[in-house]
Amino acid sequence: MHALRDQTVYPLAVVAIAALTVARPGSRSGISRSFARAGFASLALATWWVAASTLALAQAYPAKPIRLIVGFAPGGNVDNTARALGPAITDSQGQPVLIENRAGAGGSVGAEFVARAPGDGYTLLMGSSSLAVNVTLYTNLSFDATKDLIAVAPVSLVPIVLTVHPSVPAKNAKEYVAIAKQRKGRITYASAGTGTSNHLTGELMRSVTGIDIIHVPYKGSGAALGDLIGGQVDSMFDQLNSSLPFIRAGKIRVIAVTSAKRSSLLPDVQTLAEQGIAGVDASTFLGVFAPGTTPRDIVTRLNGAVQKTTRSAAFREKLNAFGADALEGSPEEFSRMFRDEVVKWGKIVKASGAKAE
Image (tube, rainbow, N blue to C red; front, side, top):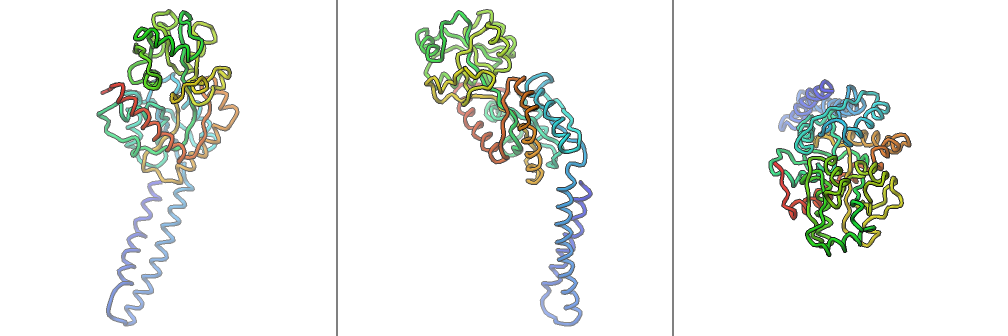
């Protein structure tokens, strides 16, 4: 690829020389006319060369393995989805997709690595909703996710569910709100930590309904779910994939889905909007991003490869096993979605006072 790019340097130099030759004022001698004819010929040749080199560059991609960076430790939803997506892209593009974990700072370490990588299509990011949240949550980031990364393709959506311990009498969202207002400042909700999607969904619920519920942060969903099951906390906003086994086992009760649509895994559970509580649209999205300097033709090609995968029944079945539903969309649609998420969660982060360094 670099060789193809370098081959455009000489023709561009010829273009410049030819232009100067053609533009020479003064003499109409045979020599000047010869220079002019040579200049036009060189200009045409150089233009053709640049166009041919650019086309060859696009056609050559991908010519080597692609790295898909995951900003979290192995074994989580983001990592599992990346490892399911990788082989499918390999099949369609003919090059291995290597999953590389670069965990830290809520996914920001991996995201920054990709933002600083060459925009050649060989270093990609499996990004998540945390990427949108971190724009406001972290005050010391050395990259701008809205400028230094480009949205390539959405992959999946993991709904967030509102669940309660069986001792809480609420059977639906309106009853939960009524109990929270009756027991002002006494209903607790657990989260996987300050600034996480389940914490901020609780804050969004507070701002929309005016209820006074108490946030209890834990180090991860596992610990939070353990105390919810044990009755140490009253409720939790959690990603469906974490809570689903305990919902099915009857250890916790689900009373609403906070996404815009019902989950295919819990088709009988109404959304908050369906229960009369509008304005709490919260889910965790996953999608592929690339360095902001990546050429449009490579972004378009990658989008096609990802969408071909997300439309397949086999891949959707894998996503369902992770508690997720497939997403589809063009780079432009995904970019708008990402920017909307940045704005939405930015307001909630600021209102909650949550910060991370």
